[in-house]
Image 1 (tube, rainbow, N blue to C red):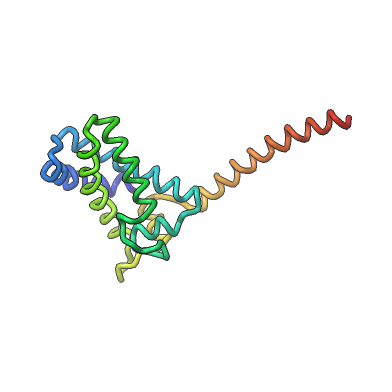
Image 2 (image 1 turned 90 degrees about the horizontal axis):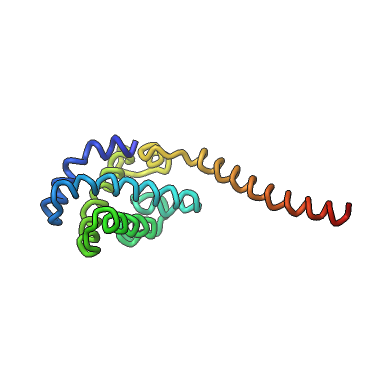
Amino acid sequence: MLDSLLDGIKGQVVDTLKEKTGLDGGQAEQAVPLAKDSITEGLTSAMAGGNISGIMGMFGGGDGGGGGLMENMVYKGIAGNFINKLTSKLGIPESMASTVSGFALPMIMDKIKGKASDADGNVSQSGLMDTLGLDAGSLTDGLKDKAGDMLKDKLGGLGGGLGKMFG
């Protein structure tokens, strides 16, 4: 879903980046998928850490702590990741990357919020997850499976050692 949403606004984001930041057309085009990757990675990480309220807070939903988008810790992580991608993959200076992030990410987040909002302009967790194409249930199940496997490995090794000790 995030792909289709970004496809719909890519031209607008690219034009804004060229006009407001001084990026050339090629760099502006390359920045959009880097923004998408940063958003996806940041949201997935926040979900894996159980920080749904932080995600909701970015979009003005739930009890995410208020303070606006720029003060949100999930957003700050996404922006930092995006700036790193811009400097390492596009070779632009950090100050310019920060400027690019300051224009691109709020535009994209605003579009996500608009798509995830109900008729009253409120963002719900389910609406946001649907818009982003994320499934909290499958992510949680995947984390449970991974934790279970890790526990089995640890206990299996311990059990084998105990068996030899008492065997």
